[in-house]
Length: 336
Length: 198
Image: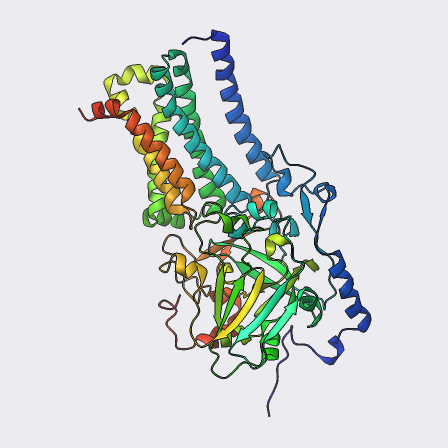
């Protein structure tokens, strides 16, 4: 007898989206884009624009607009979420500057409409999704994932999105497709880090990432279009980003425009920058240190002040043991 | 060049006020959950860059005094140097108390095994010993050896720059700017530095 175990994020008949909800999604699109207003700056003590030494922030700056999404809520989860204010003001998104507070300041004018995400390469049915398709083609669900940065800090974030596998299946990959390559938008006009090597941290843009196809088809691999119940803020990778929770954060590429199935291992940005420090796999592994710092433990970013910071053990694969079979027999020290 | 003593006294007083209030304010904001993003990283960056800025400023003082014949500014050198040490101490405390949360085995291992931390720790030890010997009474007692010890400032600022350069992931341009500034300061002061070795 074969047992099929249902994962928390597997869908059943009862999960099918109501048409009303479906239509509601179209409304979101109207609300997307950005508005010029100081309204969102008010009442948010964590807003990077209200930092202690930013005396010259202007009320006329554009503010990136996010909208509520309709999605299947995640089941109960005992983990303490990182507060939204922190997850949306502490970002590594070098296209908008290398400082953690740079993206929230500089990405507010980012335009995602129109957007185009293509799926091409070794597939029978290449796909092209516009901004509306990102929210409507698949049923959206919430997934609470731990995000572990290679810099040894972590957060717990409620993402909203759909399985990467669902999109890849629609493209009908050829059997020769062994890898999946991802590419971030290249738009130096909008992304100051792509205009100057100084702002962009010396990265050769566009940012590229990649997964093995079996990693990409793993149900945990998420294409996220939202977080904390709303569409993604610009600084978190609007309008669509990857979330691979068992790999270091830099694998979870932001603002994706292209997904290409290939037969060769694709180049990946941080591996190009420092091959001895960042591998293609980048699986979270407390036993394999970064050459310059330990990966054994991590600091969980929570809501409180300095005294509320938790240091915890880092778990292999970030605690997502179900992915371990993907790497059976592999030397994880060699393939870091 | 000469200005009214009141001007020097005001700047001197403001220097104390600004460095102390700024540092206190940022820590207060950290404890009360008012810093954006990761408060630990914020404090590490703030105290680290702050210490480096203050140390570089202390090196500029004697150049200004010499080239503009403006001896009055020399009174700023000691507070700049001492506050640089205070900021480095704060930096070290944030690292062991909030980043590593008093996991002493890890603290020891990190200082020994991670070159950028070894370098930073050495700079911290140097600056602490300079601050501790900065009191006029001790300076008199130490006689000639005081100057010898305090010439280590140059080593400390170089170690600070290397520490910065080695810890960044890819944005090496900012530390490179500090290195360029420090190197030009050293070139401008080459005569004095030569004397260290005589």
